[in-house]
Length: 164
Image (cartoon, rainbow, N blue to C red; front, top):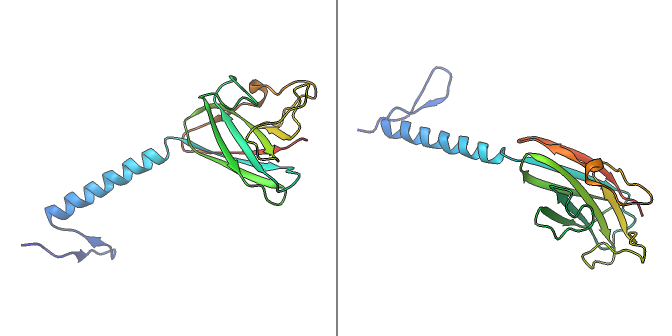
């Protein structure tokens, strides 16, 4: 009753029973759904350079609004990655980021306390950087000066240089 698979003229395998056709259609639909799901968000690759040493961690905070940017990473609109620095660099990769406008703040947490340390004036005492490398000397970086766009299914590559 079940017909066997046969080779067509191009050498690929053809399935000839209704069961095989249903199975093939189901697999195709799963593949389409998986592709749509995987490409519904973008990817951000932030290459961090200028890391002074291999101590501690490099923290990358992805902000979707100006709220808390750049050092208040406890906001609900923030995604945080912590990576180990190596050879003066680190790479922070954010996957499945919804399309939109974002900014990244980076801190080299050399003492590993999980926060950006500051002096009595509020100036960072550890290495810091932001997505567009726009860091005024006497004031905090702004979201607007460091924002960038993420599109569905695309990779956004950023080069961030730390300043100590």
